[in-house]
Length: 414
Image 1 (tube, rainbow, N blue to C red):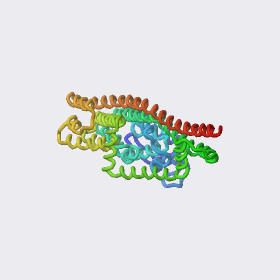
Image 2 (cartoon, rainbow, N blue to C red):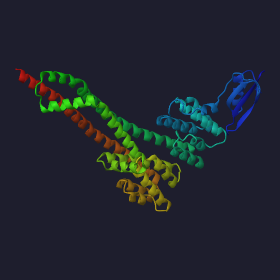
Image 3 (spheres, rainbow, N blue to C red):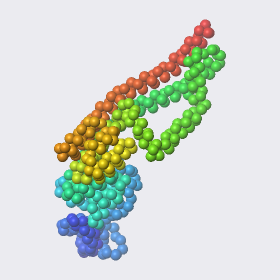
Image 4 (cartoon, one colour):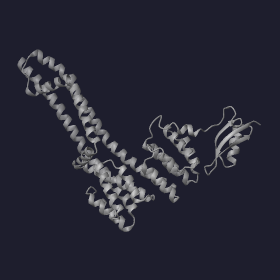
């Protein structure tokens, strides 16, 4: 029987290599599995011999090609986390779970990353350390929760909580996107229709009116001047829009400018309330999930700061973190920031008094998630008719102006 060199891993993650005589590659794989090993590669010939074709799961090669095809979406990460938690809860060892997910994952980038994580785990690294090397995919909250689960020996339940956290975050994001889709389409279509009227339809009337030489109504003259200006100086309009966008990006790239912008966001009626509630829900959900997973409060607050997108609220959490480190509790420092709603402060205080801070934070998150959904629905109910009214008035003004000119010409002719 010909010799085959093999490379496999034990259930503890130790790598073993050797040579085995067998009838074929499948026989070697079956023999290794019967001994409790997980085959990684099987090649014809002894170690060091010239290559022959054979079974090879080259995980290192997979892991070296991270993020080359397409980015890893939050939904892909959510599905991976849920499946990993399910496999571990079913009693499958970590390395076999990762190996199964590496072959089942549809996203090529995530497949490569999971392969690299598997290799690192088999080399003796902890799962959290292996995940931390891919921080573009696994954020700090993910890594720290996994690390806390490893320390407490409850990594399966921690991954389950992580999956729930990612699912809730994805649900809120989807609601925000779906709520904004219709107004966005409405605005684009309306702006496009008005632009077509001013740049393509009105110029044809302009030629007719110029040939007749009649005195036109003031509204018609105004619309025609806007049409002429848009045709002649459209590039200035685009340049002004680009300059405004570039100026805004430059202003907000500065820490002080971004802080001022985020402060002004919170002062806008309705919209500011929406932003505040979204951030409070994100704060409560992240902090509650991390505390429930065993991550220390100070470390959790540090990670929560990175999750928040509004720098004013993020800086407020930084001051809270300082007070907490001095033993001043959580609800008091949160109240002193002046950016958290009273209801959330009361619920946090109750959580501290009853020793159920993590549960109360998750209740706060659910409450404000529902509040955001209701507020968003009210905003859309106001925004959509307002947009339709404005676009109708603009288009109606243009049409009426042109009809007035036509009627004035008819009156002059007859």
